[in-house]
Length: 269
Image 1 (tube, helix red, strand yellow):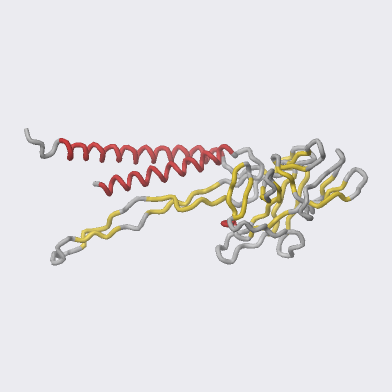
Image 2: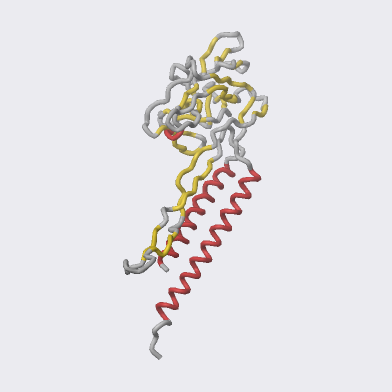
């Protein structure tokens, strides 16, 4: 009976985590460049039951399933649709040719390099940039870095950004080049919130510029949409909720059975 409690509880915990993941996807459905998370659910290894009396024939009773668990979360690393915004500071990062990781056979990813308020290097897919009062190019309050590793300052309202990330002012003078970094193994990226990533090994990502195996382009006045499918996410959330509810009813049934076993069976009257 206790095994049944554990199995039902494992199912509830799994669906709770899955619901949290789906809720986060829904909350970021309008976040530029956001890659939807997907869950991988697996069953615990089955147990082989045998009779205590080894002389019995047959000795094997059968197998017992011990529940499920959420093995991992993976980002849906595909290119989102582009939409035109008309804002000069908006940039869409278009991945054209990105190598696959040899160990995982999963395609790598490209990201913008930014510096947070603590002076730490972070990475983002969100190309919704803005200019502060000093002309510093920002991504949600974080300074966008150039190929020199320095923040980018644009002292002109009429500027252009090429497909290579080169920024030119109104006089056609070169200002800086926006840096784009490459991560070969997406498992090395950890989401920090607000569209930011950090590396697990705390090492800076290499630049994708002048890497012959990588091709990409930046498109000004455009943003990359989130890859969240709102309709499917709603459906998956409802499915997860129903599964949680089913496991909850099983747990309540076991609880009632144990209550009877403890308080009623064998009671002296």
